[in-house]
Amino acid sequence: MAYLVGVGLLALVLVGVPLQYAAGRPAAVQIIGPIHGFLYIVYLVTVADLARRFGLGLRQVIALVAAGFVPFLAFIVERWMTRRVTARPGGAAGDA
Image 1 (cartoon, one colour):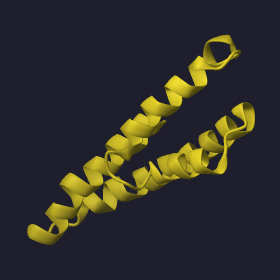
Image 2 (cartoon, helix red, strand yellow):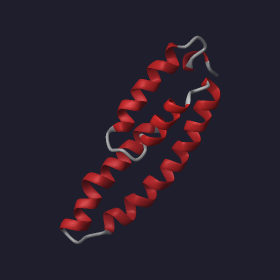
Image 3 (cartoon, one colour):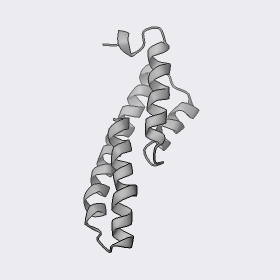
Image 4 (cartoon, one colour):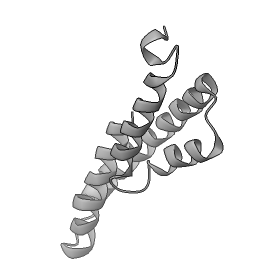
């Protein structure tokens, strides 16, 4: 989910917003914006589930939540959390 939200945010910020303001074409923002918004809500549900399953602290949850609206942060936080979760006993590999 982090990759989907991250790619959607980058498309919105790097393609949609410049097209809207520099070229006067808001169509990309009107299409990509709601898609990113929906994916972000699904991502937040995923974050809540991850926090519940692995007992994540407040800082970790804040980092995960911020990853959905800070460009490029989703890729960094996803990699960081993947390492932390799989390194724990009974991590993602042992979770069914």
